[in-house]
Length: 94
Image (cartoon, one colour):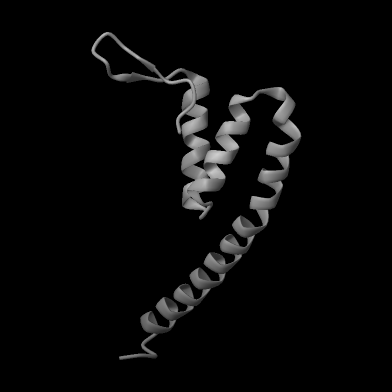
């Protein structure tokens, strides 16, 4: 799934900056619950070059909303935990 990776003299993977950027994006997609099939689709489009930019942009925009929803959920959960900690420190709970 990693585009354009090379091998060094010892057959270890060697990544240029573009490959590292792709790896960071793939990791971002996975940690934000994008399916492997959708990641594969994005990477395939990426390898097809500039002509696929509109489709890749569409994928990114579509994935943005679930990330925003997840961030909102996590922020709400963090608020609840912070309140619980404050209450416990104030002696409100056993």
